[in-house]
Every structure is written in structure tokens, then in C-alpha cells.
Length: 307
View 1 (cartoon, rainbow, N blue to C red):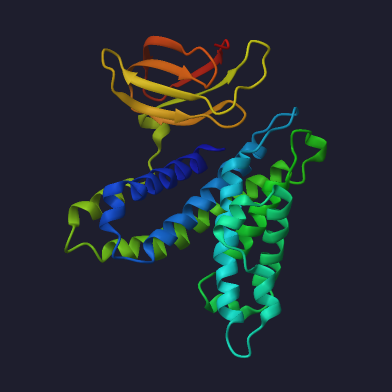
View 2: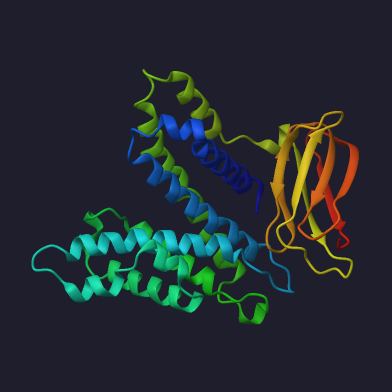
């Protein structure tokens, strides 16, 4: 991902993290539309992350984060199906349309991958069947996001010849999603809702907009990235990298790797850090007093041994 896009995605991730904090959630509880807006932004971020896996994939192919994608498919499917049911419940009641999408959240969670995809496809079709459905709690962008989530969730790109989404399409989708989050969800929705708290909680409002800042981190921070593998070179999924300022035991940064064992590009405040990489079932590996200089990149390839 190019630097400009990376900076924007970092700001999106920071904002969502801030909004999901317990204190933030408590403060925004009275704004009933705020949590759904945050969830929509989070779902779009999942799509961005997985499109980026495709965009930066090698000729050996990639493995998408199907756990996060499944949660996103479930989330958007339930949102769209709820709108369809509300629309179809108007007189005269359309029982056929209701039956096509009437699935609880628990049923979506229990469904097999194939069944979930079928339900999601049916919901997407139903949601797009009548423009009036958009008056019942969803936007056209929700239907588009559902289509993207389904396409990503069904993509088998472990063999690049079987991939249904190519790199150029992925890069284009990333730009479109970033713009949608920044312009539609943040600027036009969440920012305006947060402004209603200016009189009662100006400190919180200030912290929110601080999280929203898009900073050229490449000029002020150190970038850390890498990957975690077994001794034979195969990826270890979902590793974690912990950074502690040298001489302390406080974790300053906890960076989660993806299903491909990749530690994503993360911007860190310059300092001396002790680094600890961990993965379930493997012996942790550490480094002491690594200097993170301004504008530089700390890149690592870790090979962990099984416990």
C-alpha cells in the first residue's frame, strides 16, 4: 500500500480503536446512531485489509483473513436482511421476501461457509430488489460492501491462478473504501455526532479529532514490519509482536500478524525497544535494545521453533 493510503488507513484504524474503548463507548451511548457507524467503518476496514493482502500478494498466492471476513459477512448480511424484513412487513406483507432473508444472528454464526454465502447472496439480491428498501436503515454502500465481502470470502487465492480478484482491482477497491470511510462515515456522520458533545465533554471531542488526524508518519515515526515462519519457511498464522521501551516491562505496542504470518506495516514512536514475537504452539523469540530511528524501517523475518 502506498504511503498516502497507508497513512489514511492508520488514521482510520486509530479512530476505530479509540471509539471502541470502554470510556469512549460509555460517552457515546446516548448517540444511538454512533455505534452502527463505527461498525460500518470497522467492516470496511476488514475489506481494506483483505484487499491489501491481495494487492501485495506474491506469485505464490495469499491466504485471506477468513475469520475477520466471515464476521463482516455476517454483520452486513444481518443489517441488510433487517432492512429487507422491515420493508417487506409493510402492507401488503411480502412473506416470500421475508422468508428469503429471515435469519437470526445466531443462525448466521452457526451456518457452514457454503450456507452463509448462499444466505448472503440471497440477502444481497433481496436488498437490491427495490430502491425503497434503502429507506429502512441501509445505504446502497451497504449492498456494495456485502458484495465485496462475499467476493473476498469466497476467493480461493492460495493458488493465484484461481484468484477471482486481481491486484489492480484490489488496489482500486482500497482507494474507494478509504474515501467512503473518510468522506461518508467519518466526516458526514461520526464527526457531526461527536460535535454534539462539544459542550458536555470537550476533552473527549478533542481526543476524538486527535485520533482522526492523518499524519505523515513516515517523517516522524519508525516503521516496523516483518513475517513469522516455521523453520521450513511456511507461515505461522496470527503471530503477535510486542514492543516494550528498553528497561521496562510495559507493552507500548501490541501488533497482531495476519493469517499469512505477516506483521503489518506499523508506525512506532522513535525510541529503544525490546521486541518479543510470539505465536501459539511456538517458542517466543526476543531482541533487546533495538533502536527505532525517525524515518527508518525495522524489518524482521522470524523463524520460530515449536514448543
